[in-house]
Length: 128
Image 1 (cartoon, rainbow, N blue to C red):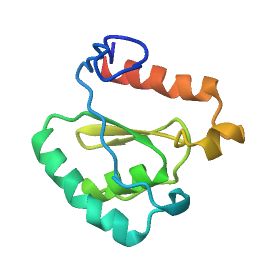
Image 2 (cartoon, one colour):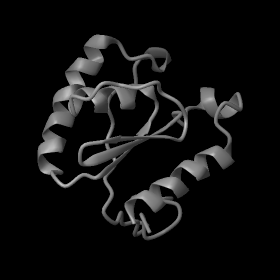
Image 3 (cartoon, rainbow, N blue to C red):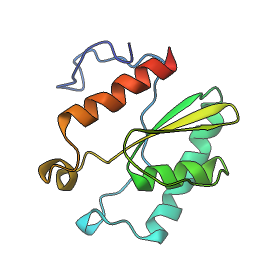
Image 4 (cartoon, rainbow, N blue to C red):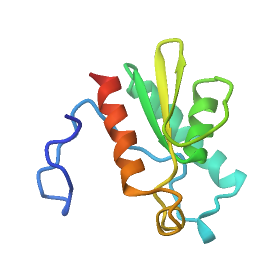
């Protein structure tokens, strides 16, 4: 179990994450959802601080290539070919990747609900 309830509808609905943490590689909403290199670099220090705080990470689920690239940079590992529902193992942790759940991906059919569900089912198996 990753969360106490299946969906969150409100900030006060009682959702609690169990041994999970959610963050973002880019913390702004740039025009056309295409962050610049400068915006990504500006936000990178947040990830560095979170890595220090969350020292016991074993599994990282990256939603999109930007998240995957930022995670590889953060952990100083060479990025491999990005794709949906791919698992990469490194010394002491694993990275699972997914297409980003943006409207562009979900409305065009690049990311279907079944694919989205499959990546979370895989994540749950990995962390058990």
